[in-house]
Image (tube, rainbow, N blue to C red; front, side, top):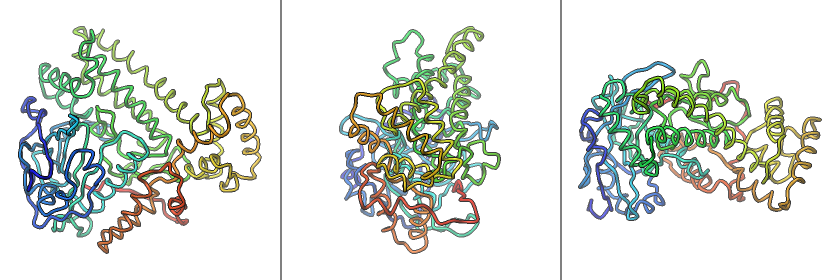
Amino acid sequence: MIKEQGWNFDNSYARLPKSFFTSQNPTPVSSPKVVILNDSLAESLGLNAEELKSEKGAAVFAGNIIPDGASPLAQAYAGHQFGHFSMLGDGRAVLLGEHITPEGERFDIQLKGSGRTRYSRGGDGRAALGPMLREYIISEAMHGLGIPTTRSLAVVTSGETIIRETKLPGAILTRVAASHIRVGTFQYVSTWGSVEELRALADYTIKRHYSEVEKDDNPYLSLLKEVIKGQAELIAKWQLVGFIHGVMNTDNMAISGETIDYGPCAFMDTFDPATVFSSIDREGRYAFGNQPYIGVWNLSRFAEAILSLLHENEEKAVELAEAALSSFSDLFQKYWLDGMRAKLGLFNEEENDQALFADLLKMMEKYNADYTNTFIALTFDKLEDTVLNGTPELAEWYERWQTRLGKQEESKDASVQLMRNSNPAVIPRNHRVEEALEAAEKKGDYSVLERLLNALSDPYAHSPEQVDYCTLPPDSDYPYRTFCGT
């Protein structure tokens, strides 16, 4: 029974101006089958995992059955894609509605790969199994790392074949998000809507995500400041674990502060700020080291979109926006420095900390050291496990670090514990992700993926079972490349 699955839908976004979306149902598929379900997420949402694994559960995840209370729609938005502005929208996704948990929390439930919409722009509206499983793996890894993210509830195969470069098995991902309101949503309304519609979107966003600023003298300026703060903290967290989003277009920046839209994303092995994995990022616009700069660029586009709400006088509005945006650099630096201190067991602040961190990263880049495993070697004082071992730079740096550790009251054991809690034993290594995807796509074997997900679920456990997932990929003559999966 659909009711027994536990769905409790509301549709507040559907009560916004009709120009913000197009009401439509997903396109049914021939024979949906649940291939993976996130039991723990289902439980936290108040859903019945066993019922969701049934045929009727698969039918809901495929869009063949619409649960009671849902009001499916495709959202309109715009965006700067690699710096170029264009009209966009949910071209292959449908928002079923907002599920309200037993605790009263509100989450968007979106079906990705559920068929063509008004915004498909010539696309088939479908998705392949591999990219949907990739998003499932990476988003759940990000959740395990403690990084704000949309999450994956289920992946179903559609029983249909889709055509990309080759024939591929079709699939649909069920994505759970605080909301799907994007910088690009505001750009769309600002460009093609009225000031009243823009105000309605801003008021809705404040009520849904930042209700504490509703009564501020200038709630729209407060909204801008909150979004800036959230993105500064989010991107700092990305940098601290070596995550590369891959396609930081303005339509891929969520106002809620969650990581959203896992396309050509990947985690860095060898430390190099110029690292790019995305096959379409030929100029390195979204390289690892550029992510903070792109973050503030995107936020500037958000500020432009809501300028008319900040002050009736345009010159004053620009002044307010620029002052707010100028805080990003200091906020990002604070969050990143605090995170680096934790990664090196430091509880207090010292003036020369930034130089200590910069010198370590410079060393890692020079010797092609693995980012994640270098911090693990430092955590457990096993310098022999890093390529930096035996270099004069490491000997000098290590002495400075030990001296710095001595300038705090906390014990060595406390520092080690802080490092254990701040340096993941495992990340979704690219070769491990590919291994899991290949087994699932080509053999229908999901056991490899399930073992990987299990190792990633608690990345700070440092358990014996995680050791195999710390190994580096074999040497290759070709750089690793990721694809959007559209």
